[in-house]
Image 1 (cartoon, rainbow, N blue to C red):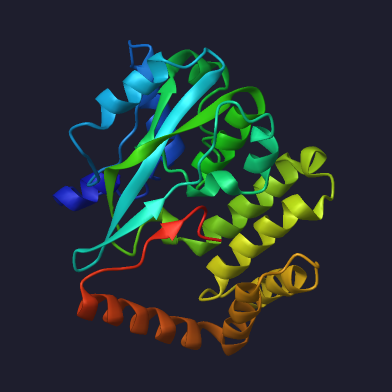
Image 2: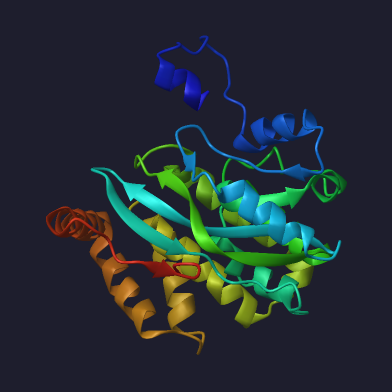
Length: 269
């Protein structure tokens, strides 16, 4: 649907757009190879992306179902920013716990290479989710398999400040679905839950769910696991959407003047 809108193809009246998960699952169902790689409309792989990752996968044991790399985010106006993904290691027995603590939120499907058999065994992406279906899939993947980070920035993601990733209603719905779906594994563990509260609280500040965002950020602040930045975000949330949007505009204008944006490491949260 997104590609059709870019081409100027009108959507049929009354038609409902399919989820990103459904589109990716359909593509995966047509694949005949042992490895799967996804890319979104408008984003780009660098020429060496597949060869580097395929070589890395070939050297790893069968319990490693996904290798992935970091990416270059290109903001509106062409400002590049390095997003350094969290560095999961195939030898780490704590893979699933780290995934539950939102550390997989810094991994993007466009940067990954997966074993087709593992993807199909797990049922692919949850097609009922309008947002964060990749995050939820990485939880399931990490529960049974290992992940391996491959150094390098081989994908360009072009940020248009639109699309489902900017749909904050869908994001709140996805947050609630994930907490419900993994309630038994999260088991009230604050070390696992606080990163969820932090992520959704920061994302929802500029939305009509601002009061909910503040509650989430207060939970983080009172958890005993807060960082200095968490208190800064709480102050921003008290200023409401107007303050958040003003700071975002100032940040983008500064990037435009300098011609670059600072690199982000890990999940960004």
